[in-house]
Structure formats: structure tokens, C-alpha cells
Image 1 (cartoon, rainbow, N blue to C red):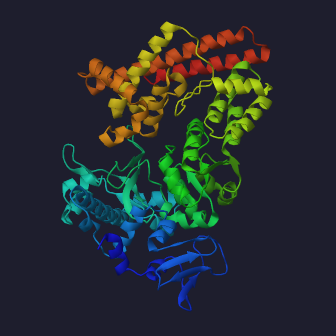
Image 2 (cartoon, helix red, strand yellow):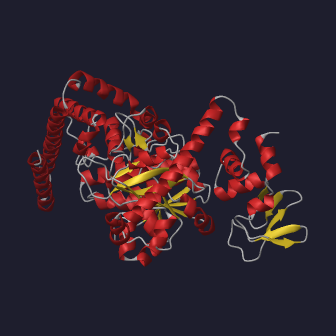
Image 3 (cartoon, helix red, strand yellow):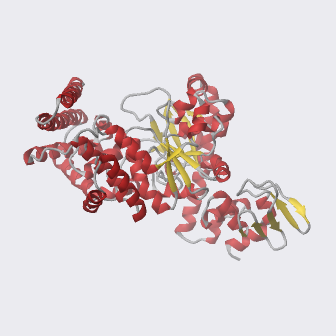
Length: 584
């Protein structure tokens, strides 16, 4: 007997479905309210005799596996694993070789994570500063803290490891779960941090995010479990296990940047809210949420990183088959801040969603001075880069007309521009003004850029040098892509699994890694830090010099008002350079 038939022989469909739907006897069948709609008259039917179900309100139906796939948003493999656990069936008995080994390892990771979550929860109750941070600083109530299973990791170094070993877990198992580091000696991965369990769509703990209780320099504010057999940052959607029912009933989902945004939103009663890892949206994230509703609304921070993330999400949404729109956050830099000020404003904001490209056009208009030629070019290039990614020619036509109307250009001119525009898979470039084409300057600038990126890629303690570097200061798309990646993933350690995230610009990574080996392989950390500081300052100097040359050219044909604006920009550049040199 195979696994599917074995599960069917141990479980009845009415027992499986009754965990989700209140069923009542209706003759030979059972009836209940559909979990897929907001119906008031029951039309969801279950036949114990035939072991099938049918939902008349949505037209869906099938066996227990198809029901679990629908209600939990799982593929068949996920539904098989869930039902196997309910039936107390070990799927490893149906596998051979490496499959069986992998299955047992996954089960041990689940067990370790569950025990660790309880350990962290117990220590939160005992730590006064952690309790004060959760309940007073972040204003999270007890019910919400329990729902999200918040905890605290002791700062002793081996408290969790010692506890887990007493419960029968080995160093190898704890390392495989991402709970300890065994590089030099076994020590806890998370220390002195507020712990937020990362759970899959069924509520199983697959990893953790640790937030510093006390901010420390050269240490990431948030630290995530590294990639494991269970946790994949590019696929995990935080809070989905608590949000999926609301998403299904409301028929839309809200995706925010941070875990804390999700937690405070749920506490405020807005529960169709989930998060990805910052702005690093992937097609897998959108597909995972899209199983519950194709209407996905983004509520990213409204800064340059948020705009860039929105741009990247457009083609991903088209591939994932979901509809993307934007929630305009007003009154706070992020949902958490808005909720703290006015929960009602957040509830209203999620219903006032805007078409993604209309929102981007508005953002570009705010950032570009359309009264100047340079500003119009900046606006045109930025918008058309997003329009180019649209798969529908009809949609492209609509937005090309909008661009033409805003700029006062002809439709034919914009159409010709779009045809000539070349973009890669992801565009990170958004220069305000094109650099002056001086070959020697560009060559030297690229050399400085590559050395700084090499130092920060291969020496994580040096990555704080990238905080003030922007994509506009760099000279090619590969460097810009790596900059954004390291800014979004400051804890990137370069393991073989993590390296797959760099595949779109892996050749550039290999080149600068080679440069590092040639230039810096025998230097100590202090010398490397001094070199990184020097490269950072030189890069900013190069950027300021180039921008001033552009401003000088613009002043030749500028009127009085434009000259005043250009002089202000020049002063801002001087101040930027002064700040970097002063921080040396």
C-alpha cells in the first residue's frame, strides 16, 4: 500500500474537514458554511460514504488531499506531509536512501525549532528588560505576544545549546537547524535578542528572527536563521499561518516589509497582512500568498528602497499570475508607526490601494523636477523602464500615453523611446543625471567601486561602509545589484546555498573576489577597515566631482530660479563630502 492509500485508510474526510468547517448532518451527508466564501446559507457538502467534498458556492471539490491543498494553500507534497502527520504515518518508510535521510533530518529540525521556541518563550517571562521592550516599547499585548510566540534568547553564549543537548540533540542537529554556530566552538546563534519564530503556513516553527534588545554597532539589528532544509528566505512568508483565513475571506492580501509591521497590524485587527524578508520580494513569495488570493497589495516603506522594490515586483507579479497594487502610507514611515499613531488610519489605508504603475508615476513625479530637461529625462527613463516590463502591449500603450501627456511629448516619440530602451532582468539604475562621459574618470571610479564592493562582500564587519553609498554613486548595474543585495542582507555569509541568490550577477562577484585575493589576502582587519574607509571617501569624492561638473554645465543655460536650485544642490554635495571625511 502506498502512502496516499495508507493515509486514506487511517483518516476519514469528515474528521479532516471538521477541523476547518463546522459540519452538521444533512441526511446521508454533512453540510457546513464554505471556508472559501462569506456565504450565510451552508452550501459546503461532505460525503463520508464517497469520501469527497463539494463547495457549491465556489464550485470546488475533491478528496481530503485537494481540500487541504485549497484550505492551506499547499501543493500536493505539502498536503501529503500534513495529512501523514495527522495519521501518525512516517513518510520516510515509503522512501529510500537519501530521501529517507532528508525526511528524518527535517523532522528533527522541526522538533528542535519547536523546543527552542518554548525555551525562548520561557526566558522572555524571566527577563525584565525584554518584557519591557515587548510590552512597553513596542506596545504589544499579551494575547498578540502569545499568538506570535515571542521570546527572548539569553545572552550567555551557550544557554540554548546546553538546554537542547540535555534534551538529546547533537551539535550537528542544532547546526543543521540553524540554532547554533560550530565554527570554532558550539555557541548559540541568537544571543541577547527578542525572538520571533518564523512559521510555515501550518504554524510549524521553521526558523527565527532575532531583534537586538540593545542596539550594538557592527552587529545586525535583525538576525535570521540561515538557510536550512526547512527555512528558505526566498520562499518564506511571515505570518501566513495566522493571515490565510482572513486573506481568503477578504479576497486580498497585504504584504509589508517587517515582521513587526505584521504583528502590530494583527493586534490592530487587520489580519490579512504578511511580510517577506524586507523588500527582497521573489516570485515564490507572490505565488505562496497568491494561493489564497490573487489580489496582493504592497505596503513598503516609501523611500528609494521601497520604490526600487516595487519596480522589481512588477515582472514577478506577472509571472506569478497575481494582481499588484500599492497602499500609500501617510502619517508614518511604515505600517507599524502609523498603527501606533492611528490604527483606524491603517485600516482605511489598506482599502485605498492604487494601481502599481500609477503609484510609481506619482513617486517619480515627486522625485524629478519636470521643469528641467534633466528632470524630464530622469522621469521618462524611470517610468519607461517599468512599462517595458509589462507583458501586455495594451497596458504598455496606456502608460506610454500617460507619459506623453505628462511630458508634453507625442505618443510616437514615447513609442520610439520604449523600443530603443534596453533593460536587464532587474534594473537598479536610477541616476538623476547621466554622468559626464570622461573615460579616465569612469575607469578610476569603477576601480574604486570594485575594491570597496570586494572588501564589503568578503569582510562582513566592513559592510557598514555601504550604509551611505547609493546606486547613483556606482558605475554599472552589477555593482548596483550587489550593493542593494548587501544592504538588504547584511548578514550574508557566502555559504553555497546563499550564493545562489547572486546568480544574476555571479560573474561580477567572481571578478571582485579575485581582485580581493590579489590585493588584500594578507592584510589584517584593521588594515582592511582603513582601506575600506579610504575607498568609501574616494568613491564619494568621485561622485561629488562628477555631479558638480554636470551642475556647472547646467548653470550655463539655467535661468535665475534654476541657478538657485543648482547652487543648493552643489552645497548639498559639499556637505555630503564633508560628512564622509569627518567620519574618517
